[in-house]
Length: 490
Image 1 (cartoon, rainbow, N blue to C red):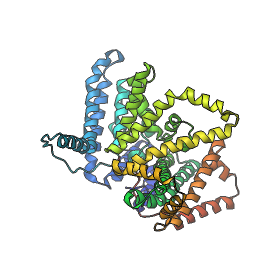
Image 2: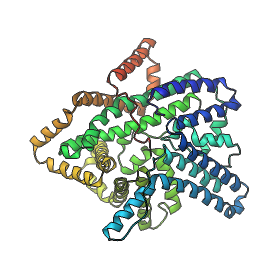
Image 3: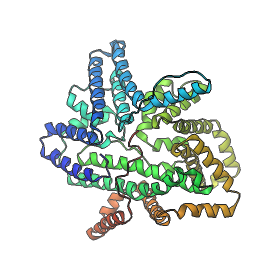
Image 4: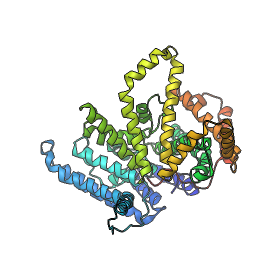
């Protein structure tokens, strides 16, 4: 079930109503049934994978809990069983055909017979998210950070909690499990705040992401029909499309959980205002970046190793992150680029600081800040080319064409017009730009205070005028039609 569907607009109020009408000690049943229904409305058979992950991890964690910290070595077989089962499912459904076809291509290039078959497997919804969530639980139990959950129903709900099941945030057991057990009272202000957060997510998705997708998809799905600056415009549009799509999903998930009294972690903090690539990753998909930090980067040694090993650790983490995002070499290159950005940033930090001081840019702190922000945004956009391109060859064609276009002003103008005069181009462009300006204005206000509090301080007629204007704008200019979220099958 998609958040931006008619079914969800019926499903959610029904679930919330039943939730608050049910005695607190039985609410987990309502949420568990709702979560399985939410997932099974997409493809019922794949709920079996959720059941398998739930039982295996519950069993393994209970077994690990039988041994004290002094007997930690006895926990290892159960940790390995948990990790193996989760990774085996992930590898089978998400990566088998990718590795198989890569091996086939290599074998054909070497004229070596290759007989491994390919399987037509539909990627289960949200598999990368709930797999990482359950793996972190098993690792935390093994390390003694948390006690194993004894209630199978509560643990099953932790695995399947519907607001964040499909696309995160990837929650930690230490944050979510106790909240699922707690009694949450009906709180009007909290519920209104949650609904407002959901509305903000729908605005991002329907008004910005889905409008921009109309133009981005036409360009990136048909690169041979476009040239030069067309790709630059489409790539910048994609940068905002993927941000609004993914952060919009997180806003809806966080808001939906808040309505029921459950607080999920923040997943985005205005990433395009970052002044360094490292800062970008502390603001973008925070639940994933902190997962990789805690369960891969630090176990590899982090930065507490010799320098070459530190750079190796960074590069490996971003390569794995790229592969997590998709079973395609384009995603691997995207991850590798961010790893290179990080390493080059560390290696050139002193030289860059000397250049900045030499040209006196530090004397103009506001200008210096925006030079940094725009530089990071340009680097991130360059990497988005590989993320969005359907094939590596398309990505390199887009890069070559974009560079070639900047020597001729007439080509820039004509190619820009080519994009803007696509079907609904000018309308979509205008709606998207205005919506992005509204979004970024809200982000700037949020840095100095709460937009919600600012609205609540206004007279009632002003508040409701804003609400009605927003609803009317979405109905008139939003894109409806149950467009999937970009991270729907990750």
